[in-house]
Image 1 (tube, helix red, strand yellow):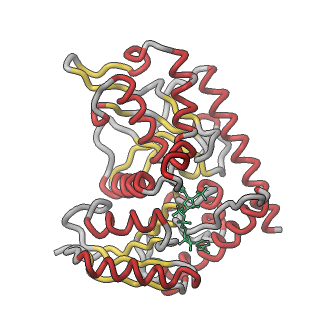
Image 2: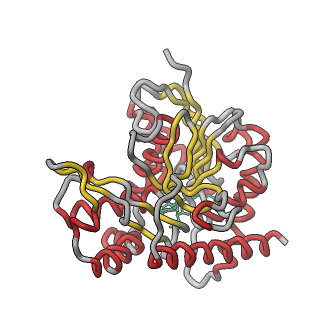
Length: 331
Ligand code: NDP
């Protein structure tokens, strides 16, 4: 039998945490033959709710779940973890300045970086979900210098999956037949959902999405804004932010990172930029990614037209500003 993998979820008593931990315990993230030990962290005001989640995990009797560590102690939470899903973060409340939210999150991610660096298992893989996800991941990287930068990522898979969903609805095809959309840049409203290289599997072979849609105005307009603003549309409908789809996409992100992407398919992940596609190096930026043997690689050499170029640059500019703001909070 396989050794259990220790998976940390921070903010585990929150909405996304509540949807995510049962998926992990059921094998959705790491496979139906992979036992797991869940580490759940939350802050003291959420300790009772966290205990409630822990009770439900007992009640669900998940065969793969070999243990639970539910705690408000960051060191205990981080000790020995192989995978860390960082969902906890300070939410933006009405009337708060961007700088205030940033400042709260910078200090959270700085202290969690130190705990992970000192106490996580060697080669721990980190996924940041909490917003501002890219910049929180960057701060985590800066304050955990001994964790390789290739091990620190942020979630743009939800945006990627939303783009697949929109194309599938528009063309009335199965979502599983659509692939290779790209989310470029920031997990924010400046993200660029790009279908230039996306394809659909049809009975007569793979066809490019732009040719099948044959409506440039939709692809360059409504499609992009729908994906960018989908989070707000869910809040409007549900009166709460998206949690089920965020949790499911976090599982997709880790599963593909650990077990690999299918041949000929890429996904979107926020990773440390090496300057590919003239994106400034040293930002956490979402790129097209393939994974193999537990390592990700940026897909190189895709053509970028003028329309796309502007969008890639715009979201990079926002990330450069966020980085400066984060650093000004540290000073
Ligand atoms: P959620 O579980 O709904 O969201 C958690 C974080 O994920 C937020 O930062 C949220 O950003 C972000 N996020 C990223 N993508 C999405 C998406 N698609 N949909 C929704 N959220 C997304 O928040 P809750 O308030 O329910 O739970 C947060 C938990 O974190 C609580 O249990 C709380 O106690 C804990 N917490 C921990 C802190 C710490 O570690 N020091 C500090 C503060 C809270 P956004 O805010 O933009 O929606």
